[in-house]
Length: 242
Ligand SMILES: CC(C)(COP(=O)(O)OP(=O)(O)OC[C@H]1O[C@@H](n2cnc3c(N)ncnc32)[C@H](O)[C@@H]1OP(=O)(O)O)[C@@H](O)C(=O)NCCC(=O)NCCS
Image (cartoon, rainbow, N blue to C red; front, side):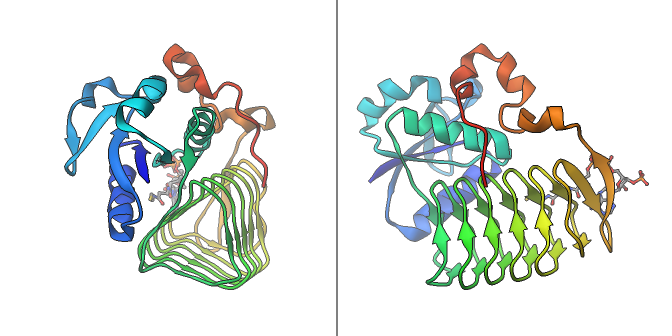
């Protein structure tokens, strides 16, 4: 199936590498909202335009599917909605070296990078990134547009709510709940539940920041995104759910 990767930055290159390793889709190009890179090649693949030009590009390149490779959790979710509204099927990129238990369910627009390990009876939501070498143990639920960074380890029966970010090398003990849009710092060891919109760091993890509830949808449609009239396509996106 002909597909595009939305976002040609570092994560986009990782996703290209995974799709090439999988060999199931033909990547016809990157889309990127930075017009300066249009017409260039990234790892040999042309940057053919942006999402605003999707209707024309779809026909020109016979594009059927897309995957959004943007690190920002909110933009990733919003762009995925825009791709679907534009008639594209959302695909996953799952590296052949990732190990995923049979009883696990995986949503759409999901990236599971090299060496990731997902154990029995997990639920992985839409637009999730399970990055290189992370471990997600049994019966863990990962909500929409969560990013589990490289080498992070989640024990059994953990719940990670929508839009949360679990930093590189962090450890989450069993049965805790990470609230929506929470940020777990690199290397943190989380031994109790984390409130929504809260940043925790350290061993054991302690709160360093708490955002207002009014900021709740800010990750979904960040301010700079709303201020850019060319990118209003995400305006109608639903609020994320777990
Ligand atoms: C947690 C994090 C998001 C905080 O960023 P921030 O909100 O900009 O916070 P600051 O850098 O202002 O740091 C605030 C305080 O927390 C401390 N701190 C920040 N991150 C920390 C971490 N991971 N572990 C321990 N302490 C940390 C800082 O030293 C600072 O302490 P001080 O007030 O005593 O000087 C960030 O430091 C982090 O860990 N990001 C994860 C990066 C990552 O995993 N990248 C992988 C991408 S694939």
